[in-house]
Every structure is written in structure tokens, then in C-alpha cells.
Image 1 (cartoon, rainbow, N blue to C red):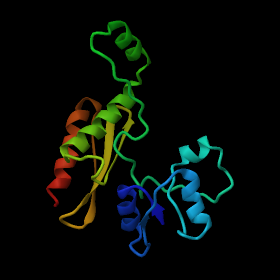
Image 2: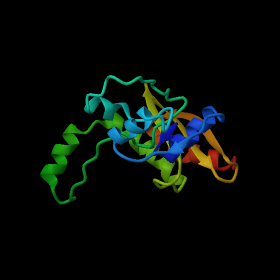
Image 3: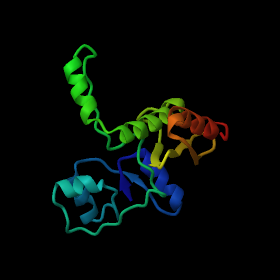
Image 4: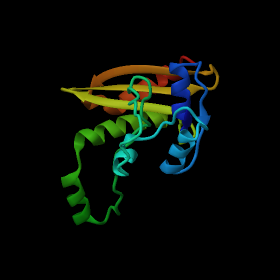
Length: 174
């Protein structure tokens, strides 16, 4: 199975250690070409990319989030402005989606507590239900040679602590 993501490599191997996972680079067309020529038996691609390019004629299997957590804040669109641009900041605040902001911030606190970068295989997904937020997070521990995963729920008002606390509980298992 070919993928360019170290995180997904670790997640796939965690789900099935019998699978051979290889790094595969290139644009969508070149990756599909490697699959079509038999260089790899399967490839992991983002459904959003396939849909955007109108590629519908290849077999697909959507990997469940239980198998492959997304990267922290994956899919979130952010805008950065100068703090002095009051009119622009007011406009952006008006179109901002507060639940997404809370979820992304929770996931980022998880990542930051792990001192993670784009090199560290980290997955995180924050979900809001009612007045609570649940964070599922994981990272690949080099010390233990395995994915460490956990889940924690807290009131939305405690979302900043939630990311830190889950990361600290996973780090304590190393």
C-alpha cells in the first residue's frame, strides 16, 4: 500500500501488520499510475482530491476514522491578518465558525503538548456533542514502537485543557 504520509503508514500497519506499506510520492495521476502498473497494490489518496479532479472510475474504499485519524486541524481553513486591520478582523470574525475554531484549537493543543511537527505521526479528531467536546488522539511512540491512542471528553469550556491533558496521559504511557 502506497502513501506519502508517515502518519498513515503507521496507522495502516497498526490496523494490519501483515500489510507492506511503502512511501509513494507524486501528484494524483502519477500515484494512480503506480497502482495501475502494479508497482503497488493500493494507494491512499484524499477523497477530496479525487472528487475535485473528477476521478470517479477507480475502486475506492473509505478508511474509517477509527483506523486513520486525520492530522490535527486537517481540513480547517485559516486566515491570518494584521491585528491593526480592525475592519478585516471584524469581517473575519463574522464568517468564522466557532465550533470549528474550538475543535481545531483543541487538536492543536494536543499536537503542541506532544511537541509535534509535521514529522511526528500524530492524529487527532475533536468532536462536539451538546455541551461537551471529545478528543481522540494518537501518536507513534518511537520508544515503544507503537501507536498510542486515547480519548477524553470534557465540557466545551475546558477544551484548551482537554488537548493538553490527553497528550500528557499518552506521554505518560511511553
